[in-house]
Figure 1 (tube, rainbow, N blue to C red):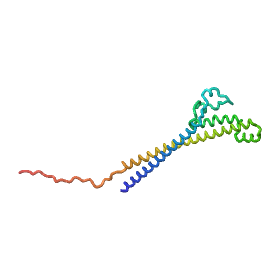
Figure 2 (figure 1 turned 90 degrees about the vertical axis):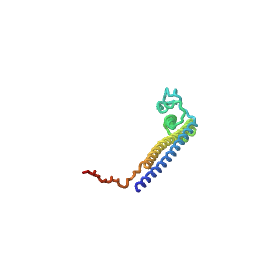
Figure 3 (figure 1 turned 90 degrees about the horizontal axis):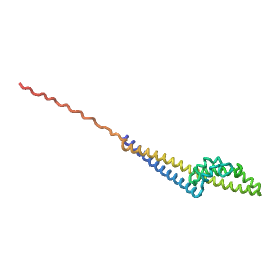
Figure 4 (figure 1 turned 180 degrees about the horizontal axis):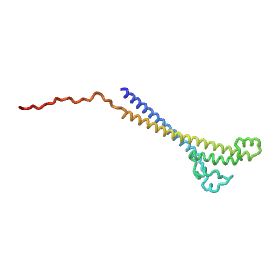
Length: 203
């Protein structure tokens, strides 16, 4: 009786764990899909396109396409930005390069401080405004990239939860179907001894 109760307890525990893991996996998968679709929708609404392939034919420093943009940006030539990988490439290898060239390697805060010190320098003020817009867009794209990576990590976690849930479910099914070993009771009946009959002899 004790063996039977332990088996049922283990099967019930495995089934409960399987249910929890499968539900958690389903929620994680839903969350991953929600973040993925949200990021993709926000990027699509921006209508940002990478320069066409012809623009990467002759990269030159100081122009729209510089040599260090190949191959990080050229691989998406002509495409609309719809994924986190594209957003990261555009932010760090396209916008950041132009900001650095425009500000001569100085950050927005440094340029802003110089502009305040030179209120009559309209060219510098225009540069500060352009750098600010570029940094803002870059920050938004990197934020989208971060959430995109989160959706990928959660997706992998959901697969792991589904795998563990399936294993616990199979363990519960095995315990219920094959875990119990029937116990033998009683002894095997021994064949009875029979009297040997000696045939009568005639005189």
